[in-house]
Amino acid sequence: MLSDSRKLAVIVTTGDAAALTAMARTCGDAARSGAAVRVFFRDESIPAICHPEVAARLTPHLVAAAAVERRSIEAALQDLASSGDVRLYACSSSLYIWGVESRELLPTISGARGLIAFLAEDLAGASDVLTY
Image (cartoon, rainbow, N blue to C red):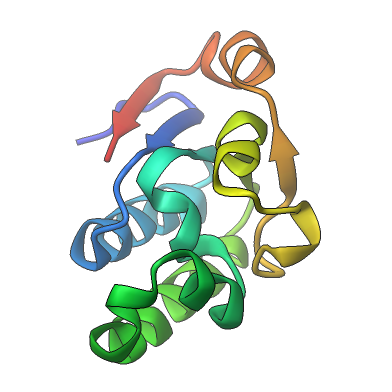
């Protein structure tokens, strides 16, 4: 349960579809209630926030099984992004490690952001912090 204050910071490291859709639902509810929501995707979550052809290049072993999950993740992120004061960022270091450029991210992603900037500007002062 989120507190009454108005800022939620989230760090996502998993690429698990169920966890990503749960995160989007929780964050969307918070945003619709007036909270500022900032989500930072890194590590294993990066393929899930890339265009489908990029995700297929990054995780070819998951392509066949992931088509339905991918569509549900994209829809959940779209719903989240349109829920209010929401910014979705990809970790610039994780993008580098995966070999991904900002232009290869889904349109719902606000862009790349460094970890230190996210910690100092988005996580600092957050009333609630969630990790997935």
